[in-house]
Amino acid sequence: MTTKIRILVVDDEDRFRESIARLLAAEGHSVSTARDGMEALNALAGNSFDVVLLDMKMPGLSGAETFNEIRLQGFDVETVCLTGHAAIDEATRLLRKGVFDYLLKPASVEEILQTVKRAMERKLLRHGKIDMAQLIDGSAVD
Image (cartoon, rainbow, N blue to C red; front, side, top):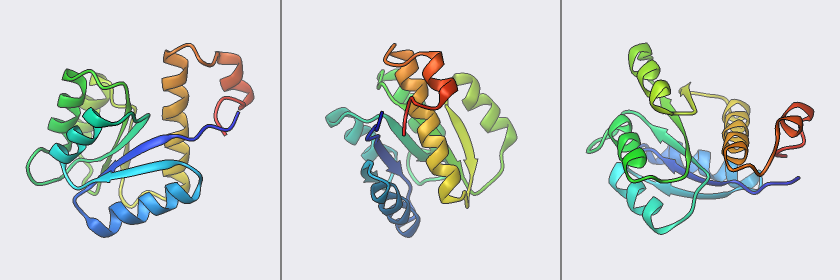
């Protein structure tokens, strides 16, 4: 099963955001970007995404505040948080609230790709579009 994952990359650092977007698109995924939390929420309101890569430290709405709004508004996405600052308490709190994973910058491209793939698998599993056997044998998302 080849799955084109719809990804929203949210980061206030232009170079990082655009680089990650290009790399994910080169892997065959559909990628959009947002510079901050409000722009991300507007993008989510107008489009359908599978995975959000969300920076934690941004002006305006922080990543944590943006994630809380994503949950409150009921957007059907898996969220992967990215940060350049290790904050174990914040990571633990967000993971308990439903964040899929928490990666430290600079995460490798392979680590980001694998995390996005696993996040998509969780979304498909939640919707009953795949089963555990497909996860185990690796045929869920290519």
